[in-house]
Length: 440
Image 1 (cartoon, rainbow, N blue to C red):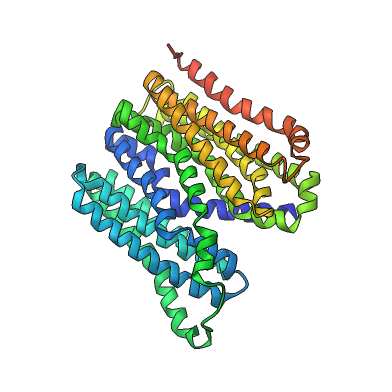
Image 2 (image 1 turned 30 degrees about the horizontal axis):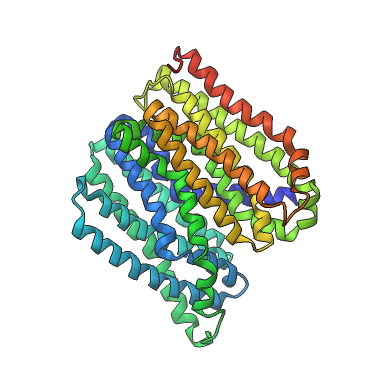
């Protein structure tokens, strides 16, 4: 039923947002306490760590979910294998980076080490999901979010700066990586006698499936996170802080998108005919569009409330609402990518999807590099929107051979899509004009 599907979407979306996004959700608070320059460096570390998640774990979470669901013994063995691989790769990368790192506060080393802990956490949560241990999954997410918010509170209460913030993030990362590994050890000693040596596919067969997905993950990171590095290169740390603030506000939609990405692959397999003919797909688009508009409307209201009375962020840049609207509209298109792009997973055409993701990443780098020197963070926000539009176009047109009716499906859905997308961008533009600013 669509209700149960949306329950899973919201649950996984919220818990993913809690486990991975608590630090970024704290960006508005940190903007006022640290200043935009330190906020920019903090955002770079958080964003950069995400690229190492897939690289260090070799996308092992995908193998755990694919082979471990319904076969706990195979899931246990695969988790152990990829955890060992991640520890080796991450440990070597951290040692090498530390030896050559002369950056401020050794932030490159912090980023690599934090990426290692994130990779281990990703493997652990995938293992829990494969065992239907949703209670433990939620508990870990809440624990991490609580610890992160307490750390951020220390910045405001005790006046901590970036060194203390980085140390705290690493401590939380190590703790959250250790908990699933502890569970792995306990389960291994409980089950190893019943675990046959040939449980599940061999490691080489697993790598043949997970490694081709790394370009897809890298491309996704370039689209979602590389803009901060480009803004830093052309505009400096303060501009990165402003762009990060806008991106964080707009990325409230990632709570929904993360849930879509975790639920829809199984949903489309179970209900392919209904999905293709439009019954379930259109219901999902209607609900997603409504929730997305309401969420972004709430963000706009919060920004105006902060500007007028709360002054939490300490940012009064009049172009901020437009940047939020552009990024939010782009992320709305990203949610539509999940809705249409999961046809690739049904047809097992992930390699084709990876090529399109890399093409969109190249478009993003080109647009961001061209527009940021001219319009600063606003140019990066425009590039984000255009990239997601191009990405959605690549995905839809690439499906023509796998799903010959895909263009007619999009035409059927078009009236559901255009209105919400236009309203998000228009709301940001109107709020910006209300603040008395227009681009030169």
